[in-house]
Image 1: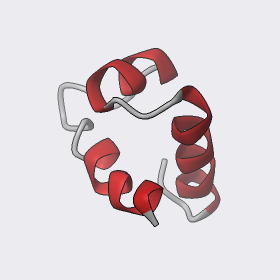
Image 2 (image 1 turned 90 degrees about the vertical axis):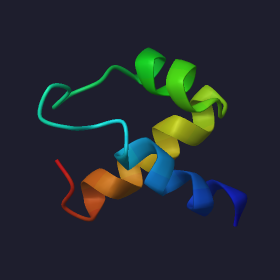
Image 3 (image 1 turned 180 degrees about the horizontal axis):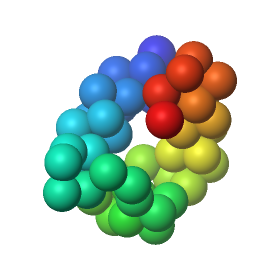
Image 4 (image 1 turned 120 degrees about the horizontal axis):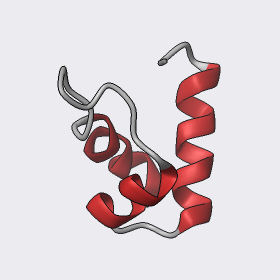
Length: 50
């Protein structure tokens, strides 16, 4: 459940100036472990977020 709550935090890191981010940038800006970030990003991509 905790990782689901982090998804909006990850999405908030993207805007017109930052249309893409590296996994390292997402980890540094949001704080969760690499495995959590990779899993959340993979889920978002599977759901059509690109």
